[in-house]
Image (cartoon, rainbow, N blue to C red; front, side, top):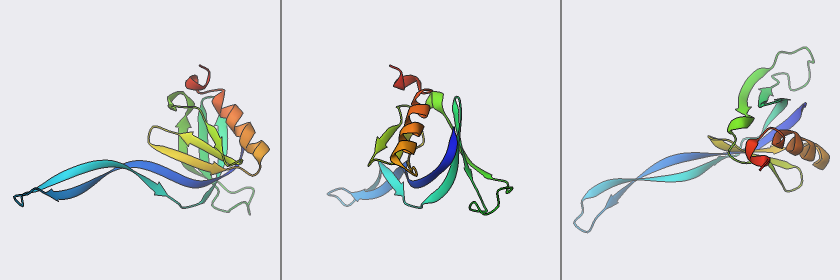
Length: 127
């Protein structure tokens, strides 16, 4: 399966350091795990190859059908910790080991097709 996907949001796990002071005024560093959303829409082309989802960027933005594409990411379906899901009708949500990715599909039926095709290859979706 292949087609356009608009990456609308990426949420990554990050560590933030804070300096705290005790009652005596002594400073100590505290590290806190948190989620850092990136809201930078990026048009991508998704290519689902059995156990891989290859995400490419078209530098010509569809203007040149012969243009080479840039590899943006490769997701291994076998390592996704949970099945794909659909939120808000057309938004496909994928949880990777490093981030949560939100893709806006062109239509609800496209989102459903991606959802079904991806979940066929995720071991946890079959349980």
